[in-house]
Image (tube, rainbow, N blue to C red; front, side, top):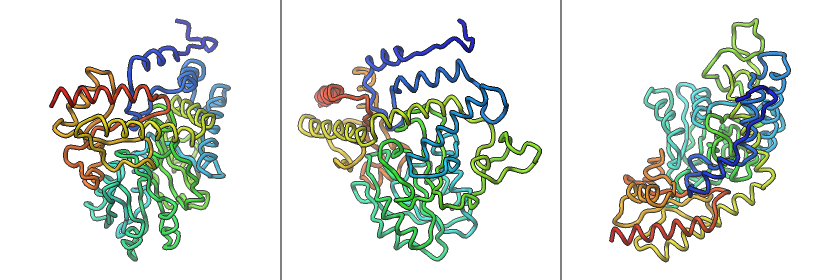
Length: 405
């Protein structure tokens, strides 16, 4: 195969063929299929560019640098940040949350989080608590997965420095009142870190308007990028030097110095970035701009509404956990008398319907919703899903329930 810079290979037809054979309801874990423009952008980078930004002065490195800057600029614009350099890249939301949490706190700090957190948040916090570095308070959630912001305020102590909140639940799509939480944090001079793994690309988010200091995102979900991308976005008014970087190393800048640069974004970006993933991410963001965040959310909510309405009427023993029409397009459910693993296995093996079952790396959430310890079957709907696919899933579940009766 000719892989010279002049040879361009794209694979959108392959993706389309796979998506026709599969009903994919696991978009909460990773969105799939990707838009054709994402596949084309990634392929073009790998085949025609391939260079590191900021490491060399040749034309391909400069082209890669342009892609990197444009991705920062698009993300900054999407989240209401003026300075694109306040977008720093990491591996995913987990990596970014660890950077923000562990780099921010000091011994003796008190941190507040919620019972709706993913393990990417709760585990580093519990680790710090067990090491005796911080004390931790966890605001409870109701049976629908909503956290009372008043409880967050009541948990504040003199030593509280940080509040960490999951914006959208990966289990049932519950949306927290981030704006009110931000107002409370401003009132008490606290830093607000938001886990936006499930809200980036699904909901309009403005850091300034919502008083969010730090927003962690991942690229492979609602932003339609590939795995291995994510990062932190800092409010224009937040002092990023309050966070100590977890890594140090080559940045392509100030190479004569043997100490880490102290300016953005280099202070947090040591080593080679996932430029193929960032290139795909840029295409994903532009796809969202073309479609409109509100339109994407409306479509996914309509699918979730249709599914719950039909399933509740037609499937004996069907039960959702905290589902509301105002949630993101995620539904967690059980069918009485059938294990969630059996349901998901039957859907995959016999009906080619892909979903996820279990605790979804969020045990505290399932305790709040009343679905612990078994967990649930989770359908995470996406922009490429259709009403017809939802109907196929309901019909499959009806058959599974009758076979097990």
